Image: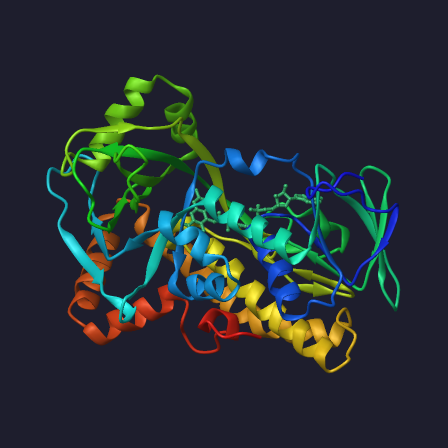
Length: 421
Ligand SMILES: Cc1cc2nc3c(=O)[nH]c(=O)nc-3n(C[C@H](O)[C@H](O)[C@H](O)COP(=O)(O)OP(=O)(O)OC[C@H]3O[C@@H](n4cnc5c(N)ncnc54)[C@H](O)[C@@H]3O)c2cc1C
């Protein structure tokens, strides 16, 4: 079995924790556990061939709390030089053809002096930094092999990989994404529906600097967000866009003529930052809501998109996943220190109890926001615009929203406060 660290793992390896999925959530889970408990034997297995992660051209908004966690894990220093602070966020509600988009809501400021409420980070940089730290800590990374099945006993589980190898572990963490096969294998059901919308993602070059400003325009087909990126090596000013359209229209836009795409893009992006152009091939991601009915089963914990896939309207999907990481790591480390069985259902139950309510709340909030804003029904427009106007005039309510968006609300696990576990 080839490992990503250039080693050969033995045919049957005994582990404490096996993480399925080397996305941000899987890697961050492995790093958090290994950093706090170096004696734990941990491996990460991913179905994707080595190097595929480098092809992800997207960027993500990372909330302040997640930055604190990445700092505590020794990862932020590697990412920080390429990360762009979001210093202001504005929200508008208009139709695509409206000549002027009145600003209904502005958020600016910091959660602490010198600490912006979010940063934009290239997915590639984040994944690369997590991999480097995993390697430094001695975590085995097995790539290009999927988890095929697993058998659970009272003392542990046996995990069968697609290449025929077998691993044994005390705990299996399923961080295998929104279509999690491990969740299905464990018989965990989901609440799931599709929005009939897709999120178009691409990087846009513009003449003038964005000055750290992010914008979200609520348009009838869905939100159009521009998120500031650090200028590239040549000094080109750049932003990342997440542009939600009905799936049929989104597919036509990304598969059709480049000129048509640029014209439609310009109509939404506007020319306030000067001339614009798409810097990479746009891609469309179908959007839905997926909430697992349980986050744990005997010797199994779901984390990240495997537990919840939400609409990107609030840019919180990955941040929600990092909250899972921090809570799961805190529960497991505490249990291990006390000599408890880290895969026991009562231990894992503490993690589920901690994370389920917050997750349901965020899932429902993003769902309601999407239904409320992604339409052109006049009475609904009036209600939501009055609502936005009211929030704008209530600084304490705005501060509350900033704290929520930064991930620093009550009940935050220690890693997200920047504290060691
Ligand atoms: C358009 C769009 C924009 C977004 N923008 C933001 C944003 O700005 N901020 C934010 O916080 N979030 C954002 N998100 C959400 C964010 O991208 C996801 O929440 C995040 O990628 C989930 O990470 P994950 O590690 O849980 O899963 P994934 O990134 O999906 O990783 C799953 C991994 O599991 C592996 N795998 C699959 N099956 C198996 C198997 N059987 N065995 C082993 N390995 C397996 C896969 O190869 C993959 O590497 C956005 C999402 C979309 C669609």
